Length: 471
Image (cartoon, rainbow, N blue to C red; front, side, top):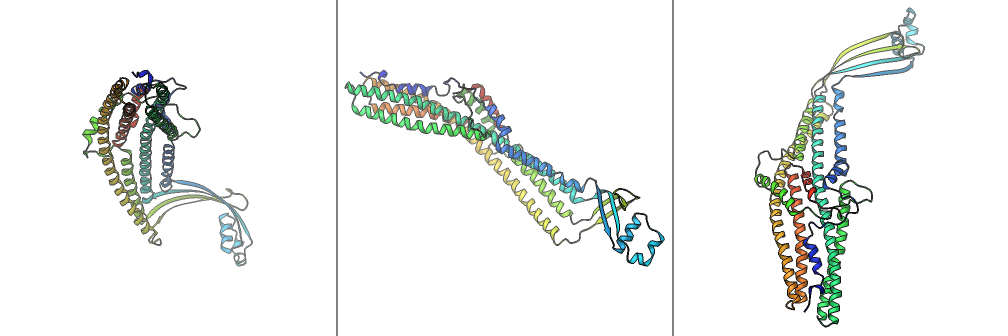
């Protein structure tokens, strides 16, 4: 009679049975999800780009202040002239005019006159509607940029959750297949020995070899996928060096994942189809709303350039033949009104451009709201579906392991063929891996739902306490 000890593929099934929670000794401290999210918040490339864009917009928002706040400047210069009007005016500014300066010959053919001029100028904007509206538009643009940056951060967090647990899943799959390969190779050796003893046929040995080769091929692909997954996670975290993150050896257990999913699923089922307050929590919708405000203010700014402007000024001037800011000073104050009646159609073109941008911004807001509702409803359905699939996958994994045990018992009693045993083992392996994939799908669905509904995917850091030690 054939015994189970002669076919150690059972070892692979035993390993698969404990896939979710089997601990392996750590070589270094594993990276938790909370640590990964904090690292991405500060170093992820997308977050850094968004932060720089917001800083740029915030700095640019100060530019309209030049048409609102007073300005002061110093002027200095030296001129030398024989122009009759310039020469007499310079002499007069220097308070050096004498009766001889009025002689016709002196007026008509003056000697070269040098003037060192210094000035202090203060300009005070009084009525500049385009500057005030430009400031409002710039500040709204900052709000839009800030909201867009926050949306990028939320999206990055969701991506980190997927990449983090995806890498763990890939590592666990490779580990299980490595154990399965060892068991399959040992089984091949045992079956070949049994062929020599005449206990089984050569066909049994060939089928066992085929199965071992199949597991080996799967292992090669799984190891490549695991490395790629860790590299992708490192890139998402903003790492540029060769160091890859050390990860836990298994996904969180079913109980922890399902508890979190059930909580979110209740809110998701309530939200499906609802339109009240849609998009109010999502940062991309807030960015679109701020964009509409900015575009509207910019359109009014362009229209206000057709209105008069009023500005005041005051200045001190010094004029001396040799020294800047020397000699007798004089002052001038005034108010200047200007009205550009026609600037080569530039003002009208500006109004047309900003009006079109305002229309586009409103269309963008409508699109963002519609997209928000679509993504929220889809994420809610995915969460419910993934939760149901996890329950089914859990049952299927248990049933496939039991089926494998029964087939192995029949094989030991000579009532089943090697093909049936290998098929049962393959089914058990696939069901166990599918169980882990279903658990990952629930985690993915939670992250997607949180992002789609305007929540924070970092809530999944609650699963850190149920994640095992690093591989």
